[in-house]
Amino acid sequence: MNEQILFRLRDLFKGSSHAHGDSSAALILLLLVWVQRAGMSASTGLDLSPQQLARELEVLAGEHPVLAKEFLDSATLRKLNPVDLTRAVEMARQLSGSADGWQALTDLVALPAILDVEFACDPSLATLIGQLLAPEPGELVYVPWDTTGQFSAALAALGARVVIETPAPPVIAMLIGMLHRDPWQIEQANPILAHSKAGQLDPERMYSSAATFLPLGMRFDLQWLDQAAPGRFPERTSSAAVLGLRQLLAVTKNRIVVAVQNNVLFSSGAEYSLREDFLRRGLLRTVIAMPTGLLHSTQVAFSVLVIDPRGGNDRVRFINADSQRFKTSTSRTRTTLLNIGDLVHMNADKLEGPETVSIPTKQLLDKEAQLQVNRYVLPEKVAQARALLASAKTAALEDLVTLVRPPLISSDRDQANSQDLADEPTLPVFEVGASDLPEFSYIAKPGRRVTLDAKGRADAQFLRPHDIVLIVKGSVGKIGIVSADDEPEEACVWIAGQSAIVLRVRENARIDPRALFVQLRSPLGQELLKGIVSGATIPLIQLKELRRLPVMVPPSELERQAIDALEGEAISEGHIAEFRREQADYAKNLWQLT
Figure (cartoon, helix red, strand yellow):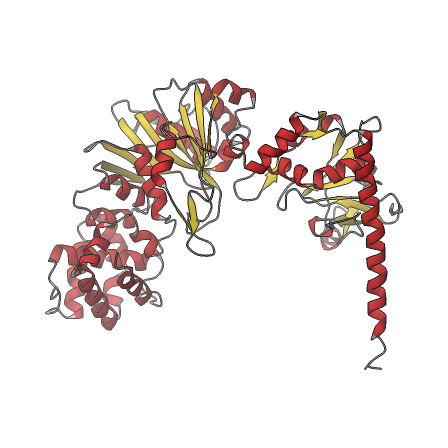
């Protein structure tokens, strides 16, 4: 593909005040449609003035109300710099007049990504979803929310007839469709309420298959939803992902391939209700974990689900596409997929490997319908860690420790500005955050000072000797332990930061807190903690998962070795601190300012 011409076209309008962002991409696509319709001759448009070119483009845009609103209502075309417009047409002619350029016009999946369209994805993702769905030639495929037209282009390339629905004006998708040899059916409508009569599903509007990427983080107003579609959805939720999955299931007969944000795979509430129903009815066939960097506008974690509306699946296939076998970096923040054919074969149970496993649905239901791929397709190190535990004496973490949540805090400024708390006594405390947890030895000192409402304080939440501080949000797995020699006085207490949880070993536990800390900090413990990490945008460890975490109860000799190792680190840390003080003394009196 001659991408360089497309890049030059994109850059030409980047600085324009009349065509920027997706408007710039839409203008370029409109030019390509016009050149394609005008013919493949390199002389196309040479005999037209910039004003005539603008009128020609306006006539083309006037063919559909959505395009008319984009280009005519704002008179965008007439406001363009005539020189820029002439250069753009010349570049479009060059593109259409070369063999590589004609391929650029037919490889429509890549165009939105090249033109930096908002919410565009790497073309390999759309290609994967198309091949997973594998539509028959002429099959009608439902593609809601496809504002970029990439998924529709991938499906159309396989011979499908696509139907797009999107609540936003489908300008980009419509222009991509106009570049395709066969027309697409495109409607501006809210897919959540589409195919309905008086808010209820219209049984006459059904599709054989569907494919899409459900919107990220979108929420609907519950009051509006109750009025627009009363009782239509089993879960009363504002989540577009949950509602979107229900809608797809309701209007599709045979196959669904859909990308969803990862919180659908592990969250409680409506998401759990949805997962449980899908598993009990045997609707879910495959879950594929995708690498980050495939979406151009966000690094959010997501997965692809393969759903069979006919049911009957008693096992779920889990595939880890977030491995070196299936991905490569194209820049610091962007990724493309490799070996797409192998992923398709894995979905069809035709190819086994370390990146895939099949789990019975009953087993998944026993695990609270958790569907994160990293729970079941284990990296080699996690598998090694669990093998070590299998041959050792273990206990659930909750049997050994009490989990203590950090108290809520307010800053000194908030405290001072609050009229309700202005007359209440306060207690200065110091917060131990992720940056205060050392690589070795005990926690030396906490970081920032915060203010705690003394009236509502809970002394049990103050850090005590040998309390273990574990980060469960953000820098998950980072860990530290409070020394028995540095217990803060009442006037200066320590608390754990808001992203942490405190593990306080029970008095009658079968393990010393220092040995437990060393174990959780070790490669074994860190791999076990990685195995329970979830989170769609920010990594987190759910407390219910942490409570069930199996840990080794070491024999007395190994426990003693762990304690001695930690105390040895503390002694070394003291020596290092002394050496630093010595270093500071060598030149402290040289070239001083009085």
